[in-house]
Length: 245
Length: 245
Picture: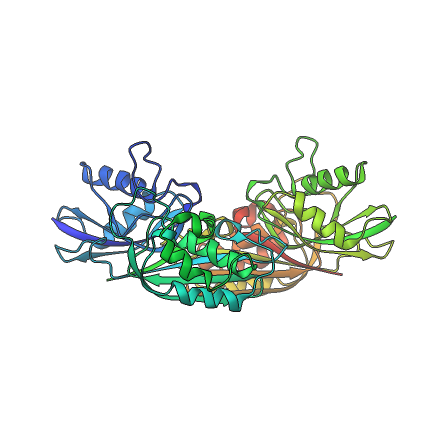
């Protein structure tokens, strides 16, 4: 058996997230597994670097799966793109070491959240943007982002109330770029909890429009209580850009 | 009454074109007229610079309509964007001269056709691209484009078989840009016949992959017969960029 590593891009708008669930196969993982099962004539488990929520997009999700030796990377690339729906594309396929595991071996992930700040809608990219037209104080958002950077317990920024494992994560960098009609917040870290980036984004937006102060972040973090943080920004603005190994 | 000139952007994917038809209101003009009718409490005729086919997009369609004096441009801009569907945006509203007519007074239109040439799909812009992965000889396409430039009878490039008016149009410029995974063909002229740009694009693609020669264009034009030209490239790759007055 060969272990294949693939890089996947998807418009997550119409999917229930990356991961196959008991209730639905309508997930990106499910679509890829269906195509591979037809090719291999047996079920194939596709392991993603991590889940993305329903509606979240990816430009560089990484996954791996095992297939018989007679399949080549080139053939799999063509076959997958031929049979996957038009909103999922496999950007590359390569043979990985036998022990490579896309989730366990990931060391850094980068996500981007795009906020459309103009009152006039962007009809062409609307599926990948969250519109927020209140005036924002970017300098305050940058100050708040500083407090979110580092190795910390992010319980207050976790959407899963029944989380039993450690909520300590390292956020390496948060950058906030201002464009003409858009603000892009890019987050990189060793891993993120469920909804963590969307809650960080909602909190930064609340700071940006004055409903919270940058200094409040310290208190929010130490409270270890989801209620203290800001709202969960919608999934559609979020894209997984890159996973490093 | 005031005469308002508006600039409109739309993702045409789910519409039956710009123009209201007897059989359907599911057109861009229809959507704008519905919103204005609710505001004005009477039907409002919206005149576009020209029709766009079902599935064709626009970044700068121009239209005009008459409304009572008590409406301001600013108010209309906000109101229209509030009530139009998310795939139609009004980019600007301005008061025009009483006699301004968006169709009669248009002097130049620019359209762009985007061809995705890579085998790996572009999931994020798929609705605005036509995928064509055969190798293309761009230099030959540029030669053919020269033959299509100028003031000519474009009967062979007209999709309407029952066209009774003159098919003479002036094509000012056709530029073909090569990008990494894409070819963009930009057409400007004083006006275009039904499906004309899509038929020119299909013909240029046939030249690009060797099924026609650049010199064939002369013969195609002089035949004044739609059958002689190439196929009609799909609507989704086409966007109306600009209308000049």
